[in-house]
Length: 241
Image (cartoon, rainbow, N blue to C red; front, top):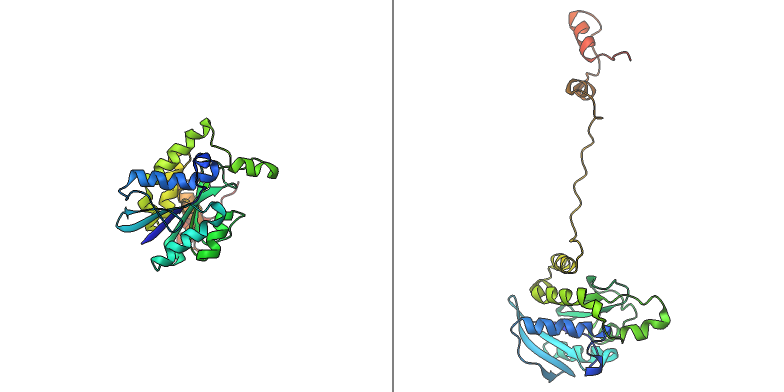
């Protein structure tokens, strides 16, 4: 089983907050796939279902963001799972709106929900960060994360959440690079492409094939006399400018 934890704050007044994008993500996954109705357990709302061939528990902690780990930790211990069986989805100030990144482990980056999960579950879980952008001034951060998404945000927010729900099985299977490409394309970005192999260095253009052959295949030492020497000198010898 995998635990897919979306982070946010409970209550209708927080429903459209930027800080609640984790709740929004698991809600969209819940709507798109065959999960049980939401029920109260582990200090949160949970729903059970499958993504691909894997059994998945969706959880939305109802402890408020700063205590998210209490809820996720209870579920992890109940099912005898480890941090490697947890995926947390949450908002990221240091990513542009609509951008997404995923990694295993790492620091909490000042995010109190992640700090709480680190404390109650350990560090070695996967973290899907969904960018909400930075207001540009530290004093405005609190109002920004607890402010609602604007109408213009719908241009990237809805395609992002829909693409994540459509491809949630990739998230569960660990197909991270493929998932990131899907999310980037859905929000108008470009998929990551493999860098082309370094081209072999060729002779300068404008040289004939014979001249190129002369440069690459010139014998180390030419015969010094005789008809063959004369011919080779005409063919391979250095030409005067």
